[in-house]
Amino acid sequence: MGATKTEQEVEVLEEQLLNHVLMVYNDDINSFEHVIDSLIKICKHAKEQAEQCAMLVHTKGKCDVKHGEFDELLPMKRALNKLGITANIEDC
Image 1 (cartoon, rainbow, N blue to C red):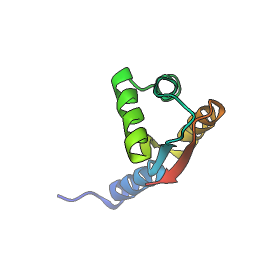
Image 2 (cartoon, rainbow, N blue to C red):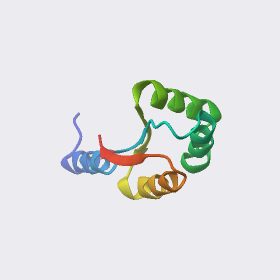
Image 3 (tube, rainbow, N blue to C red):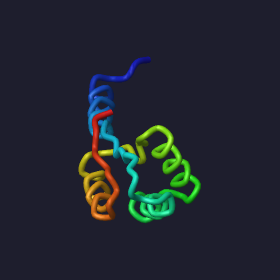
Image 4 (cartoon, one colour):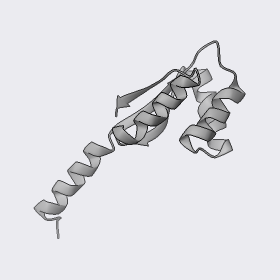
């Protein structure tokens, strides 16, 4: 049996709310340790997750470090920017 119209509407709203990503970009200024420590502190990453994200930033030029609602990601973006890390919120 399929989802009711209300259930479908809720699913669409959830998708719209969670369709943002916090993207961190590579630069020639920040060290791996600084990026790793910042992701642990600001984004609540585990050390291994932060290390993997830092490696992706270095090798690919960017990494989506967190998915979620815009209002949830905005304080993280601002905090990373204050620490000298280039980060933006993008649509998925």
